[in-house]
Image (cartoon, rainbow, N blue to C red; front, top):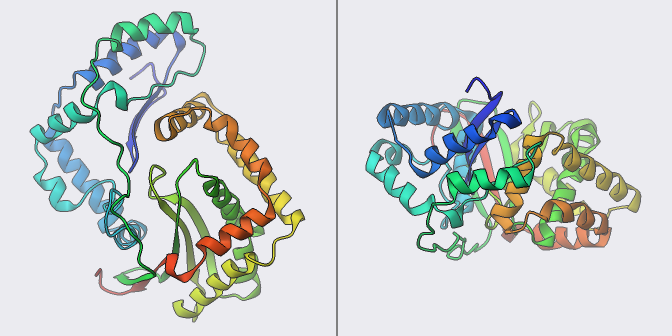
Length: 345
């Protein structure tokens, strides 16, 4: 590890990602180490590591106001399908996981057809290719497994839930949306910026500055993943003395306003901000590699990152308003209230 300033892994609902940043002259060493780790793992200290995951679950979900809220949200928003459970799993699932379970999972999914590798940096292709062939080329393809989809999921109208947690109240309004690379997914990137881009976003100006109804409003899109149908989220923390019911009405009124009020000048400002944020997200080799891997792994096309700016440039105000009319409707929303109280779902 001494030769790598950044060596880590992460797991989401869509992907498990391993990454390393290191000097180009250590590329062969990286290929050897990672090929052994991925293709021929030895799960030393499996059960102590399982305990670490349990502690992580307690810290980030059971005892976290935000984690507790988001886990309740996905269970309510996705009554069926692959997004119903949080990525870390339930407590009983973690506790009952065995070393053989882990090896069986590895044999099933750690196969060439499920892997995407991206190399960014000063290693020429003609030098990298034989090294990769040497260390990764011997792995045989396994049985093809269909990609998980929310095929069994059918949203049958508005869903609402209230959870209790010893923390300040908060409102979440979520709407279902399609995954990338559907064109409507790009529109939600624009809506995210339009509504929640700091102090210039519509929510902040209206709910925080003008109406004094909220102390904080922020958004998230493509939650909890991007491989299947997902959610656009609005979080709003009420100002002192404001009920969540009243705050919900004001949030929804802003979503309704988009359907009939979106000027070209405002759209142009949002477009510039979305493109700036997108290009800034690839400022380093590691971030560029992550974006390339994201496109290839989830959409089967790394060119997604090349085409993204072109699509954003082509978005019209009419398209955004049409998307608002389509998705910002009561029978497509999930509403969660988190109230202060003894933890209970």
